[in-house]
Image (cartoon, rainbow, N blue to C red; front, side, top):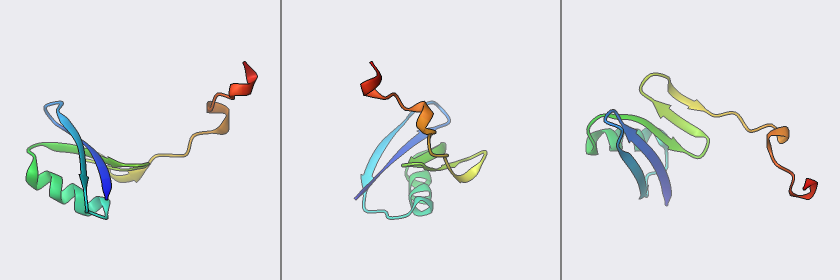
Length: 70
């Protein structure tokens, strides 16, 4: 099972838990099921209507807070 976060052009959306294994298949399914899907995310991978498919960069270690530094 995988979960996909999606949003629509009317600022709605949600999370779907399903047996779809790939992001392209999830995008196709969500576009058929919901009107106006503009973005789908799964982990760092995403699809958007404007950008297509992509992957978010990993965060820099400097962006993480070290709990021992407090």
